[in-house]
Image 1 (spheres, helix red, strand yellow):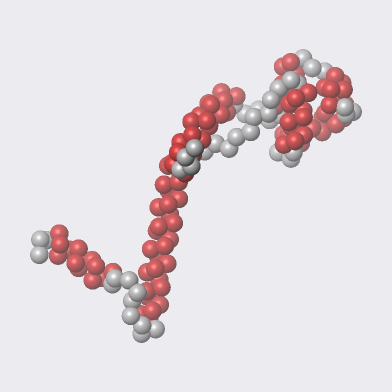
Image 2: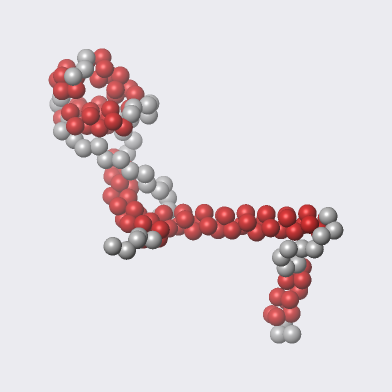
Length: 150
């Protein structure tokens, strides 16, 4: 089997994330999936606690810790199983595709590289050393001459 390229990987992840993004939009803001599911399924706190093998107070603590984003994934997975549900975990881009995000990252890195090279050249010139790369002013003049057809 051929190695998957980064672009292929991003494409596959973008396709997989589409369902999650749609679900997130459709679900709106749900503070505690555990509490919401438990109530929607009609599972009393005592019964849920029994399924998890914990006391009733622990259920309230679990729901609160989920609301506050402090719950551990393993605990959330066990609670989901106790409700006969499956925990689905995903990281999805907020606005763009992964390919668009990767392109923006590449452009940002390239801009930073160019700026670092220019700063290094300026330091070299200030120290009386020759530039390492092409002189930007000379390159600009050459480009103008090329555009003028000279």
